[in-house]
Length: 144
Image (cartoon, rainbow, N blue to C red; front, side):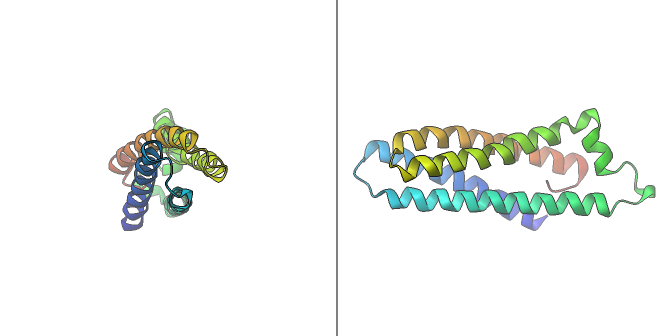
């Protein structure tokens, strides 16, 4: 659970900081692009770390299930209540992964206005994904 919270904080912090830094490029266009690129690299790294932690947590939850413990996490994911898990994966992991890559590509060509716009959407998907993650953690006791 500690790794889950640390990776969550890194993802939230990285996306928020990148978005705010990107906004400053709209105010001061002469800023060196290397700062935005390094923050986007951090955000990509934190997204990868979050995916690894969640994959490990789900694998441990599925592998560690015993019949006397009640319904398995695999049963939960495949039930109608599992829609929250799949939304979490789509909005909180897949969305930021794709959007951070798009931001990286736009930052490489020095299109800071486009990068900032993408970072706003990226931050929204991270927030939605992490809220769903906390709901899932409270309802299933699995730190996804």
